[in-house]
Image (cartoon, rainbow, N blue to C red; front, side):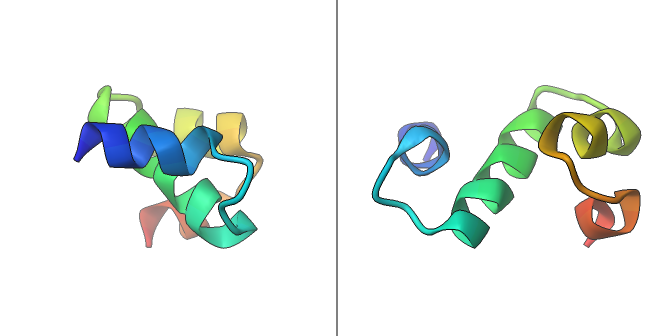
Length: 50
């Protein structure tokens, strides 16, 4: 599962929305807060919460 997330996160052929979602999941899996994940991904906290 981690390998698939990593490929989606850094893959050049992945669409934008799944790539951003994979980035959020990977950051959250490392124990980062929602505010930190939102800052790093360039999203609002509400979007990260969903």
